[in-house]
Image (cartoon, rainbow, N blue to C red; front, side):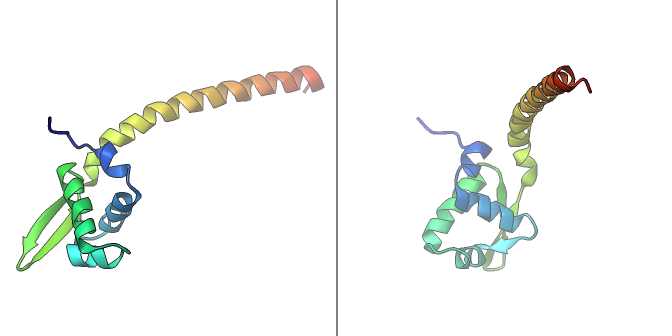
Length: 110
């Protein structure tokens, strides 16, 4: 059975998150990426492969170089997932704030 890769799997690894961050501003070749990490080029290539399979980066061949570019729109799935929990916790905190204000008024009459 083949495993489907998605944005959640991609961002689960700190190295891949760092690669996405590096590529968010500019396209970089694989060698430049590899020089930024204390691991082999082969290990970085594996991370790049996973990010490509997840749709978070694309690779463009320019001459003999392969340049990686971030495809940040693919993170919208993650953003939507996080947003639902953000709204939940903001609601809980708002309720707690209301409750604390009520207690304060009851205690101090303010």
